[in-house]
Length: 189
Image 1: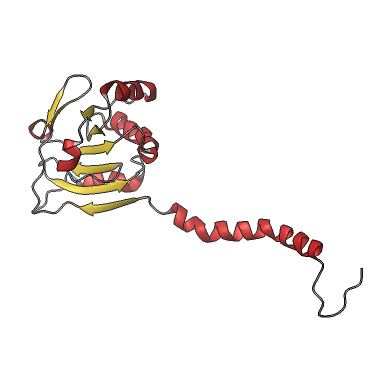
Image 2: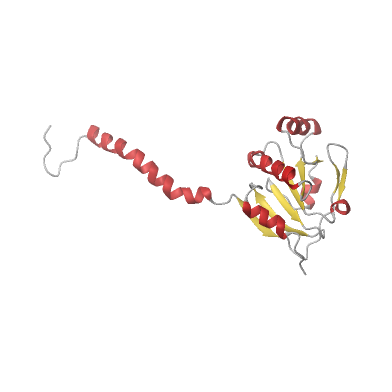
């Protein structure tokens, strides 16, 4: 087939050219978006120093009572989650690793929000979660802590003061969260 100068290529030729470029376009898109994907999927904000710390007073799935007084003297990772929450499920293995490697420091506590005890019990057993899981079936504790996004985690210093609120999924085995937790033991005015 002969083409004259200035004439449009036949449709079949245009499709072949486009098809040949698709992998290159996909690669360019991937390279442009990769830095965005690699960015943290969480938002970390300081707890307002003038805001009162909500009371914790719940029983975990093993029958142990957890309250602010019991937690005083320990760094605490207080994680609000639900079984229907995909980012919560992704985060759970790293919370479990933090619990296992920390040997009780920090104290890792999960607060399951608005689900039945039987459902949470099955989930915990299936996934092998070993840290304490508190049940908040009516979402009352979550409301007092201002939780609107799951997962939401609060980092509490040994002096009992909340230092950080983290909304979204975190890899708790990474270096950055390790620095946050280590920083909880540093005294603040």
